Amino acid sequence: MNINATLFAQAIVFAILVWFTMKFVWPPIAKALDERALKISEGLAASEKAKTELAVANKRVEEELSKSRNESATRLADAERRAQTVIEEAKARATEEASKIVAAARQEAEQQVVKAREALREQVAALAVKGAEQILKREINAGVHAELLGRLKTEL
Image 1 (cartoon, rainbow, N blue to C red):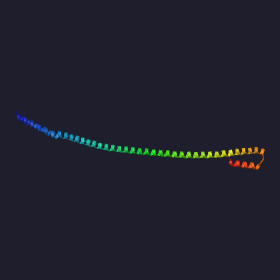
Image 2: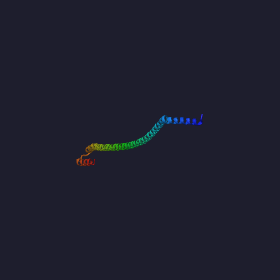
Image 3: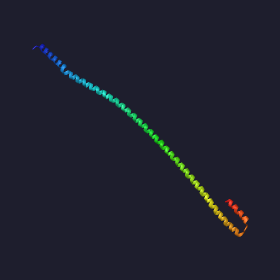
Image 4: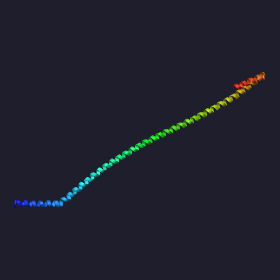
């Protein structure tokens, strides 16, 4: 056997192998690699899109949280103002009621003082009449006694 013929035969077999590989084996492998590269690029694009959507959603959540915090702070302040207003109104009503009660008590006290004075005058007048009776029993001078009783009555 000749080494040149062997080399030539091996070259032809190698060429057939290369042609067979290029025709039947390499296209499915290249297609699979291309599909895999496409899937990877689509996956990376989807992950980037998901990252941006997540960032947008987080921003929206922060805005909503901030909005709800502000709203709750506003409602709390409104509630405190309403409570303060109610307290002030209650104090005002209580002050009015206290003033009315004090005024009624003063008026009643004045009426009782007037009644007591009248009762005292009645009692003093009765005592004066008794005293006059005693005086009249001893000495009878109607003019002097009438004048004395008149002065006593005006003083009372």
